[in-house]
Amino acid sequence: MSDPVHVKDINEDIAWAKINADVLRSMKNPRLGYWIAIAVSIAALSVGVAGEVYQYNVGMGPAGLNTSHMWDLYISSFVFWIGMSHSGTLLSAILHIVHADWRKPIYRFAEAMTTFSLLTAGLFPILHLGRVWNMHWVVPYFSDRGIWPNFTSPLMWDAFAITTYLISSALFLFVGMIPDLAICRDNAASGWRLRLYTFLALGWRGDDRQWRNFRVTYLVIACFLIPLAVSVHSIVAMDFSMSIMPGWHVTTFPPYFVAGALYSGCAAIISLFLLLRYLMKFEEYMTFPILDKVCKLTFVIAMVWSYLNLIEFASVWYGHDIPAKEVLIAKASGPYSPFFWGMIAFGMVLPFSLLSKKIRRSLLLLFVISLLLNTGMWLERWMIVTPTLSLGFHPFAWNTMWPGWVEWGIELGSFGWFGLLFLIFVKVFPSVSMYEVKEMVYHRKHVVFDDVEAEIAKLYPIVDPKARGAAQTPDLGRP
Image (spheres, rainbow, N blue to C red):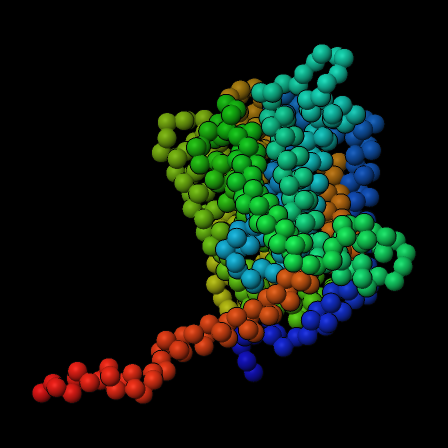
């Protein structure tokens, strides 16, 4: 039996018509598990909506927010979802620019993950405000009130950063789908799907001029998104580092947050990769070799994050900031210590399991590991916020903060919201890029073969006999 990891990324003999048929079929007839996932997502979302309705009627008291805990689970979750949003678009853009064609079967759902993660993250600052009906006050707009938002507030920075990144990511996702939307339009018989795809395809015919403009536009957006994604999570890091709380002054916070975002995003890509492979019957496109590359990439990013995490610990331990050092000791030995060591175990130790080939070949085990990796990253976000606020500069405000049922309900509802949006997307739009998979198959089958021929020609040049004789003539006079 051949090693499933060391085979080709994709079957090079697959017919282009079959690629269209498989992807279009997935949008009509997914497995039964898809509908079960929809039901679970709706149930989780219902719990979150119930929690928010209760909080809306009663006030922010059930959220447990008080003088010392002005931030808690909602802001931790905001940072977690912002982090998860980064890998999809950022990795897709980077891999597109460096011509890593193994990204082609998986980048579409990763970009969708980015968009829906941002839509989920944007809910938490609004819920944290309490007065959700005034959420538009964080956006500067002309009004007769003559009141402008506080431009020094992190809420303003987040509003600008999230809005810019959401619009750019959605545009990147949409532009990349245009050729596939035209395929969907041409294969839709009638009804709302035909009207929707006709509208979104923007009159795509696939001529040379359209392809040339499409390539340039897609590349320009990809180049724009890379610095934008890095700046967005750096701004989220500065939400903390601009305050005076102990432990939030480490200068490595921005790269630490960016690395953590890429880490949690890659772990989420593995989870969604395995779910879509099963639910949408994509075994021929989401293959073991591609999964193997994603796992290795996740391990590398996990090591970078672990290194930056250790730098943060060392900076606090060997520094002269006594309150920050006490908070670090309290994290490791206080009431939050199980969560701290859980973060270390899941976030820093567990990634070493990805070095095992046997684990990378086990789909079920890999799915569990990817969920645990993201659990570790969620714990890391929570450990940044809550222990620091529990042990601030004021001893009279020291306490231990545990989220209540309303916060846990809203947290569960956020996963239901994200899951429902994602599942609806893969049912309405192609989650595997048809035209790019065809390009991948073509290049693997023809261009690579031409390169091999060129290498053979260099190693064994065909020399004209007359030229060979002329070239050998000077040697005839040697002793």
